Image (cartoon, rainbow, N blue to C red; front, side):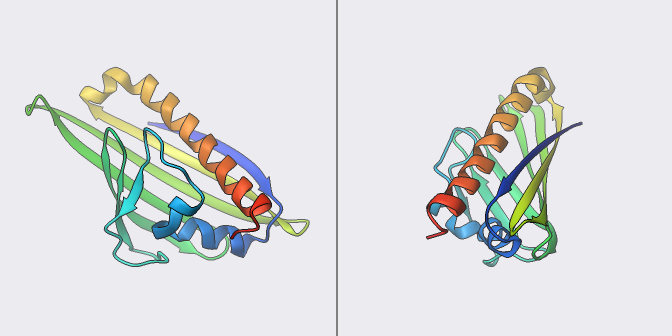
Length: 155
């Protein structure tokens, strides 16, 4: 298991940051698709709350997720996983927990994003590459969040 940590400060109050993160159905308004993430679908409700379930679709995987912490405007966390059978027989799995902590600072928000990654089965063979891609994706997400909230005024 690997835990990655990312931080940024956004010149927007915590509630606005939280609201954008919790609006899974409209990520397409601020987060372009990538190799790991294309869309969030099959939401049980939106905006999300504790226990909300969803599916994240990417070009190479489908992650089934659930919101595990929802304490506006300070914290939101979700756990998502995929289970595969490579060549229909070789088990492989990926579990990812994403935890946001939002701390008010000088009228803005210090955003902490912790991503815990656990791989199993055949995916262990490419764990280093998976962690690298997840790290790049996390940085991209924080940059897009900051850009949208600061430059586009959240519109």
